[in-house]
Image (cartoon, rainbow, N blue to C red; front, side):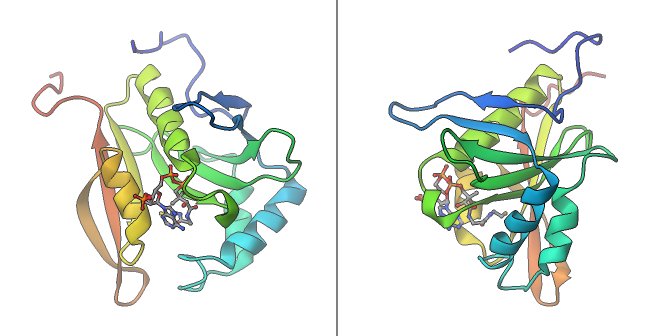
Length: 187
Ligand SMILES: CC(C)(COP(=O)(O)OP(=O)(O)OC[C@H]1O[C@@H](n2cnc3c(N)ncnc32)[C@H](O)[C@@H]1OP(=O)(O)O)[C@@H](O)C(=O)NCCC(=O)NCCS
């Protein structure tokens, strides 16, 4: 994929994205801005599932995160066709560190393991690639083995363990996916 022209729209906009299917039989999935009334419900049920319920995190904290559209962050609801309520949410901060940072990714337990998380990561990579960004960034909680496995399989590597970032004794793992091979950074 080639880099976007400097005159083209920036990546990670507060608009609707239709996610390509990566395998036969996958449901249609779209991303579009979180509506104010949706932020409350999303925050309530996401605060009730791990890893957020394990910390625990207050729903009000998540709600304010899902209302973000300024300061370089965009909150997009994850939607499947014919289902009125969002099935999840992602928040992306771009630009972040020579590439975008996915600050939040959460899906309803009823849709886990159907490849939707992978499709959202793939959308992030496609947007970053079009913008010519050489890195993707994400964090996984130290005890969130499932998310770490997914991110490693997707090509992320742990580059730092951020001790006591959210809770004492629990590291947050900062993970990076290089979109350019090592040793090819332009001078
Ligand atoms: C993590 C998550 C976004 C992945 O999305 P998904 O659509 O379920 O993932 P995919 O179907 O594309 O890929 C499957 C992989 O996701 C991971 N996964 C599946 N269910 C999971 C869960 N409940 N919690 C964490 N990771 C999970 C596993 O690595 C799984 O691979 P495996 O079958 O080999 O174990 C989603 O499961 C989720 O929202 N989990 C709860 C919240 C969470 O952990 N968010 C990430 C915070 S860093």
